[in-house]
Image (cartoon, rainbow, N blue to C red; front, side):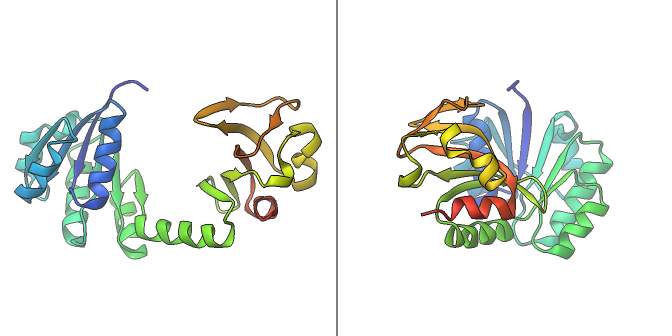
Length: 218
């Protein structure tokens, strides 16, 4: 991935998590918050960190916010500040704005303001916990649409030491294996002769209904 410049506005738990992951991936990351203490803490895991009020246009201009490839608005519980910040960023011509939403209605407002991507961390985390309880073999997933997911499934014992051809999950469950994760290594587009071992993670794509049938095998 080519190095890009990111700005994260709001250095609470969510903002810190995003900023740290981007920085660890070798990206240029600017952390912004009105709280000086948070900014000092963030200096350990971002490229730069500044104290600034993102609801003030002059502050954003002085930071050079237009020059960033992407700005993540991770403001905590202040919905008004979140909305005003997104509005200013779009008016200033920021290329890509990702905004954290606190509720469905908040998200609708952010969408109308032109936010390019709206995240719902609390809702998504709740869904992940529920999905983990309902399908304990699913370790991770990406929602592609309301109907389809990509899921990382822990292989049950009775499926181990068999080839993908023997398992034949495409015809039995109507899902496709796109990768195998084995002790930190990833086998992309595994061949039908590939043997699945105990402890392997199978990355599969399909409808949520079909994936649920596969992931609930004991």
